[in-house]
Length: 459
Ligand SMILES: [Zn+2]
Image (cartoon, rainbow, N blue to C red):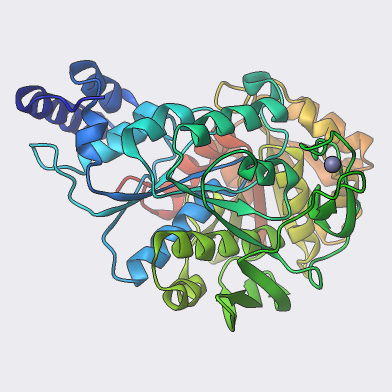
């Protein structure tokens, strides 16, 4: 691949910045259009726009955005100037728009580091342009099945990306057998992260997503379990097993709704690490961020320290203050993520109101059958849930699923529009948790942003 000439570069950068400026003036932030325009003018503009940068790309089913936030925070705390694609536009052209907007008029990057969230299927398109120093894969779960054709197919898509980037260090979850298999048959170096066998809650092992041993096609067994198909997996037939992590959480000292305190081991030292976001999956995200710092050659000490002050944003456990009453929003989009959110809610030891929103638009995946594989029964057993508002295009389906799960009539209420929902939420006297899927989150978030005066993500 060849870099575009100077004239094309200048035109491409100008078109990108101008398009983005106009779109933002008209209130449309996170779109791919500026990237499409720029790459129409100069197809290889990303070669120029990323030249000399040290880039970490984050992909996987759950936890991408939070892990990106954590890595960016760690790099910034270590004194690195860092670009983060925080708009959520994580396909090729959306990422291109962010990278090109970060350059001078001649296409020279302004920041030396970048943390880029990338869709699983877009990885193979992106990496040839930007040659990332590290590729983080958080985990793989069934997600948007109609879009990718199943989790095995998603794994293949990611592998194609990895194969196009042999010099990138892979940062992989040691306990998640699907993404761990990416380390097989590639020359890339790997930094493993995970939870040591002595920690983690024991729940039901859900092997629906685990797949089979990539060496001999045997079924996995587990000598300990964390959640879903994550844990100390091994193949009794051929001996293929979980790798010992380079960044390991060896003990969880405290875990509540404000966050966790853990002991983390890396490079033969053990440090107490405070993680400012709650739930076990954020312990994994935190370990991934420290492992990414290791892959990027950044101070591990600073990365571990930074986790105490990281803030989530844009729907992933985002907090709003509804005139004194707290609302926490957690994006949910598949059974594994939703069940983890329920586990988190079960840890809440006071009464609360719940909002569940379900859409089935393009950004969500049209297939909503995943709600049948989600453990609403467990949610309905929680005595602290005092009211559930059900909202979104597929509210009726969700309502029926909840009834089937044992929710009583008085508990449930379908709300058809977000202004009406807001009115009801403002009347609540107890904390509120909202669990929307993607496009529902965008709608709910807009109403909450207007009410609370919080800034939009691109401001
Ligand atoms: Zn095997």
